[in-house]
Length: 336
Image (cartoon, rainbow, N blue to C red):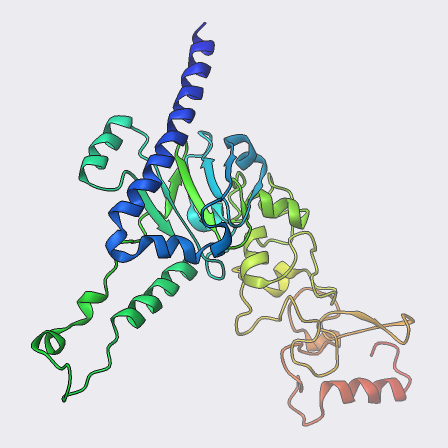
């Protein structure tokens, strides 16, 4: 009986949330009319569908498994209670830099919501980086004036300051917590999902890359899946992304997802571009193996007949490494 009542209560709250969402949209248009909020909403949608936009609900279960927020829709989503906290960037697959989206989250306490309605907008807003940049540009354009000392230069014009460029629509939410219900609209489809393994790659993206959503380092190369995708630009399911024979986590020695000085590049098979593979690669139609770091341990060991994959002339004798290998082959060497 208790579980049944809990289920009914949750359904009732979800219905109330959707109703509150519709009311909130109306309040936003009224509350931000001075800033041209109607135009703000219209910029996110083609004019011919602004007044006939479909409503879509993304359930908590869909977020747990990974889903997609469709473009040009009014979308309500429920953050799963299983999620203690998740950043906006991870939740939306770090698409905010290139995709304009905006939304808001309703207060979880209905009484708090009623109080906020009396004070203004009943919820907290969030805007993508791209949307914030666009709004800043539009505000500057709208406030910029062309003056003429012979026509309209006034005391008001002279006293105008940059403080007037502030917008009443401001980004507020960077962390989402379990049990929260939010609204979002986006100009392009974006992934949404939980991140149970904490690797920075949400479930929707993990499914797309074929990585394991329960393993933060799917390929076991020592670099988190999220770092491989967003920072290193390698692949989370390939231990050796560039095919030079050296594991990504050995090339990226500090495993921070960046190509730092003193490291070889996990996404380029020939870091110093001397024509020799960083590790060992097949040459002569696969008949021979040649390269610089022959034991694939990421350490330059000249006494082992290795070359430094970070330098075109490892020993500084004025002869390029590639040419030394060529001379070795001409001389009939068996370990070139």
